Amino acid sequence: MPISDRSRNGSPLRPAFIATSSYKPDSMQVADELHPVIHSGRVVVITGAASGIGRAAALEFAKLELKVALADIDEEKLKAVGKDVAAVVGDANVLVVPTDVAKLEEVVRLRDKVYELWGEVRIMNCQWSCSPPSSLPRPLDPVAVLMNNAGIGAEGTSWDGIENWKKIFDVNLFGIVNVQQTFVPSMLHQENQAMIINTGSKQGITNPPGNAAYNASKAAVKSLTEGLAYELRERPHSNVTAHLFIPGWTFTPLAGSLHFTSKPEGAWAPEETVLYMIDKARNGDFYILCPDNETKRLVDELRIMWSAGDIAEGRPALSRWHRDYKALFEEYMRDGLASSDSGRA
Ligand SMILES: NC(=O)c1ccc[n+]([C@@H]2O[C@H](COP(=O)([O-])OP(=O)(O)OC[C@H]3O[C@@H](n4cnc5c(N)ncnc54)[C@H](O)[C@@H]3O)[C@@H](O)[C@H]2O)c1
Image 1 (cartoon, protein in one colour):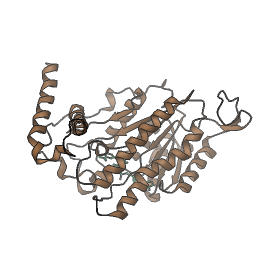
Image 2 (cartoon, rainbow, N blue to C red):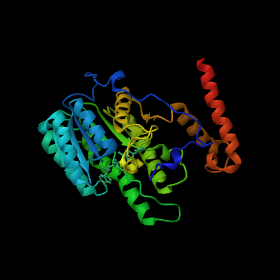
Image 3 (cartoon, helix red, strand yellow):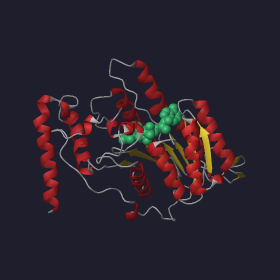
Image 4 (cartoon, protein in one colour):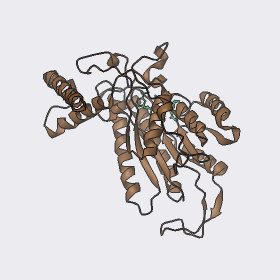
């Protein structure tokens, strides 16, 4: 499990912070009909849509009247989510495609189904010098939001669990690579703006000990998505942007929800995390770094800076968890939080 129950308890390495606020839909501008990507009638494709964050995303996008294509390896749960989403946006606006993102041929099938249903074909005058040539038919803007969200938390230490390492990279990294390689070439030729949202993790940035395989897969997602963002923005006339979605602690099966009877205070509900994501994606943010009820943004910022400081200052790897650096790290966090408080006073 990537985020263990244990790691949520108070400890000297986790500066005390209990937020009482949550991300309330009321205070948000998610109903902005003028947004070029996230608006009524456009299409969102979500992987890992049968549960947790993916399910919540499907429902929130449906409330915004997007057409929703749902993909997940769990066919039964996916069909149930399909019904829930159809109840919001209507049967005609939902597509359910059981898909294992680790299998390229299944991802190709997913794309073909989306294009078949929502990608009318028409002859366009290509405004770019790139392929396809202007005489060829090309699909009409079927995908506005491509959300690569499927993920697993199988565990593997550096010298153990080789099968889990392969599984986790097949889903968490190659699942995204497969989807990008399949969808992006078509999306590049769309007329309207589109976005790709890849789900990473704080564990792929600060690398807390406990599950090296998961952390490494999410570090690779960060690297992949930063590269994608650069490649897209350097491309002439590019109409597609990339975003790295970094959830905070969100109450889902992957984060241990099956072991609790109700949501722990520190976690956000999947809907809160998704609403935050939509808000920041609409804003054009690349790094969508979500807080939760126990970790505010400043705490994340300080941890990320400390982690980068390991390299810049020549400290040992993961010094945040090194006994010789414990006191220094605590002092650094205390000072960082205090100076921000005094700055605000
Ligand atoms: N919940 C958290 O606190 C948290 C924190 C950071 C990052 N994340 C990330 O958010 C994403 C969503 O996770 P979640 O917390 O909603 O977990 P979840 O277990 O509720 O949902 C993950 C979904 O992915 C699906 N899936 C697994 N393997 C698949 C495959 N090969 N092909 C297609 N679908 C597959 C599962 O069936 C499941 O429906 C993951 O990428 C996860 O790593 C979650």
